[in-house]
Image 1 (cartoon, helix red, strand yellow):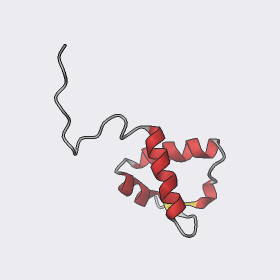
Image 2: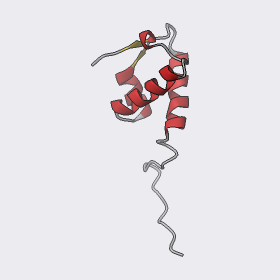
Image 3: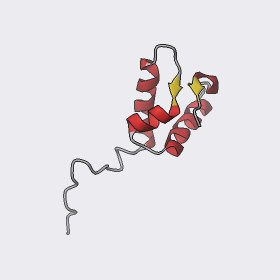
Image 4: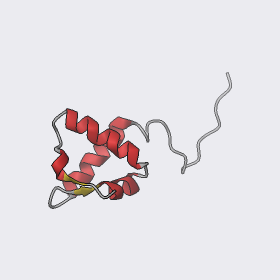
Length: 76
């Protein structure tokens, strides 16, 4: 068997970018917001993901009724 070379510390794994982990981190960010409002651009920066990935997270949470779209400020 051939083993893959170890990943560098700056290289993301599939787990690091998984929707489940990113959603947990997003919820933590939202819970730290004193007024319950979270700038999606800022969330993308903090989580180091593209903005479309943030939309994936918010869509899942809205479907689960854990989050209302009005709680987010969209700065397009």
